[in-house]
Length: 478
Image (tube, rainbow, N blue to C red; front, side, top):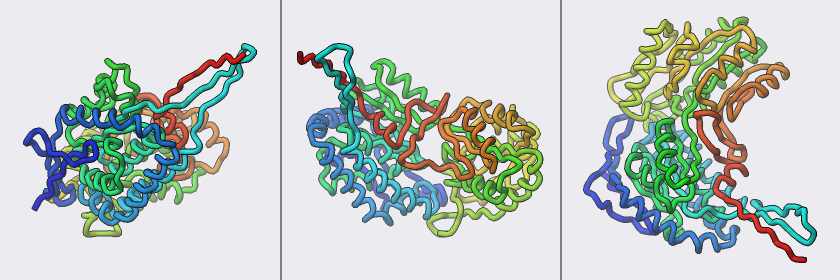
């Protein structure tokens, strides 16, 4: 029997107002997993009203008491790790190891944000007047909304909800319609621990309906979205009429630069890891590689051999594999079209280049050479296990090529020369740069993009402050 989930609003599981359902498909087998309600703007408004009603009492709790709730969420997530991991594997096509990492990292993230209860603070500023103090208070925004992607669906619950809750906000979450089952399990956890009603609400549905309602409602003080550039533009447009604060993590086209003096084995291993992680469906993973001409041939031989060793299949059956399927049929067609276009424009397929098998949305690990900067494969996000490789002569040329992009999320460079590294850090126009390591951020860092990769950011102290607003008080006491 197929599971039918319900919205979670105001501390209760509630039926859908319409009779429409969204089918959740296993991308490895194309089998039906579950159905979630196709929510409407009405459900979104109902959830926002519940969050608004719950927010004053939640903010009135001492932050350290809010932190206790976050720690309880973390503890329950760890207790249900196997169930949560299995759900992520089934609905997202993620490998078992990566799914387990996501679940445990999510629990750690709730614990980490709980630690900020006693650490975020305001300021006292010196006044120009005698007998006056200037206070800067940091206060909750109120009701927030989180619109989630499908590629790291469970972790993004924590990335949006944990900083919101610890700072006294409440939240309405819209999971991706492609991967909602993990959110349904999270709702069960929140309900099980008795989290106050309305503090966290979960509404299923499509972006143009539910997502737009969460962005356009005047009662929402912050809308945070992780998704595509087009989704970000739509969210900003909807939020603009109320001048609602937005925090957006959008696309990426991360360059990986390999210098002549790089540790070749390290560079190949890290770039392969950064490319096939989650089947290449990660905003910050290496999307294009620039290799200095002196090492190009050696690098290509090593890269091709490493890609040949990449294993894939149904992650629910095969535990020790490197990647699973793409998320759905549309993603498979998009990757196929991008590879075909690259070949049409002169690219040479060194390995892979086609769909794998007839069942499931699998695509072979693919390397494309003979690419040029103006080709679409070097400029548009691929979001699949496809890696274009281009040679360059000088570091200055590499910097120019890397920055020639509308996105600015992450970047990487492989070199054993500290001068090369420091020049890259000075010149690269990206929110993050990884030096001699794979593309994967830390929860205490700050994950934020430049240009069309987004506005605002997440993680660490700076990510926490996205959920705070200032109140300045001038106190004349003499």
